[in-house]
Amino acid sequence: YALLDIDRGSPYLTMSAITQLREALETIGIVRTIPIRSSWSDGLHLYIPLPEAVNTFDLAVTLKGCVQAQGFEVKEGHLEIFPNTKAFGRSWLKEFVEYQGHRLPLQPGSGSVLLTEALQPVGNHLGRFWWSWDFAAAAQDFPLLQAAIAAGRRNRKRSKRMLTTFDHWREDLRAEITEGWTAHGQTNHLLKQIGCHGRVFLGLSGDALATYIEDTARACPGYQQWCRHTHEIARKAFSWARSIENFYYPASSPETKTRSGDPQQAPLPDGNKAKQWDATQRIIQALKSLIQDGTYQTLESVTDWASEIVARARCSLSTLYKNIEHWHPIKSGILEQLIELYVMPRSVSDSGRNEAHSGNPNPYLMNGFKSLPLSPFTHLEGGMKSSAFKTLHKKTLSPGVFGGCGGKERFSPGPTED
Image (cartoon, rainbow, N blue to C red; front, side):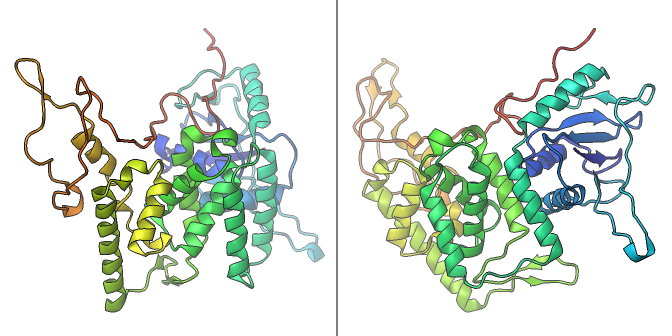
């Protein structure tokens, strides 16, 4: 097992930070944790039960690298990890360095109690604790954790080597993405591969990288059949994007490091800025043309939109996603605009009869476009539908009361005792 300790006064002792911490753990196969108030001081312990024993130091290295990749700072008073990455003693002097110890849970009179997912106390019954422990251990993605542990130890021993050929790596990534899902349990691996391709070979970052991961995953073969995380794919894509961005740099535009260690992009020369502006204008014109000729009516997915605009704008997929606010049917609001203009019912007069909209349609508001002469739509009887319009399947991003960290339904610790 392992344990994450967040002390009172830590900036991470908030629901949003704890949710991000759990999302980070999911990327290495830890999908269930047990929250416990450590003592009357109101600190938080997140226990991580495992189904099998693993190497202690390797687990410590892997957990530290995982949370640091998501932007968490591991230090006393903020966030501590047990087991810790201890120093090795000098064997020739018969030195041995112990791992740091932690307070045992649910000790009588200590103020330690079990907590719900919302961090509300539910008692300190040991039977409930052990039931929660067995349930969490069985739910972990242990093969993924084992792979993460092996990679963590290798990275600890030596710095990551650059591949002898990026072309070989690129082709491997493309082959896996093209194949998509072939069984259950492949989501985290595929999201990482998609993210590596977007970051290293397309130069994406931030929201553009997260969107690329999500859109590509949805378009992969086997996604609907085998992926068990379709209800939370946007959240997982964002979590992977944040992790990948801290470990990988674009191959074509290496970043420099400041003395503080923060990556900074070198300023673009005027020539590059002009090329970026030109690419943006070509993307905008491509979007206008596919709306003007009605092609957008045949586009059923974000991937279809991207492919059509890339072909018309004569740009790369990397350039397209760097201009995502100008074309993405959902994130830019284009879909809502089209629905508002041509799918909403016609106005109804005081006499109760449907009346056609007068004049030209409302101006297309996105990015300062002028009114676009869209192809006309024939309203059907009743005015509640229109012909020749094919809407995209808009995704719902709200997690609701289900879909908590690590599973379709949030973990319930069992009935509350009187």
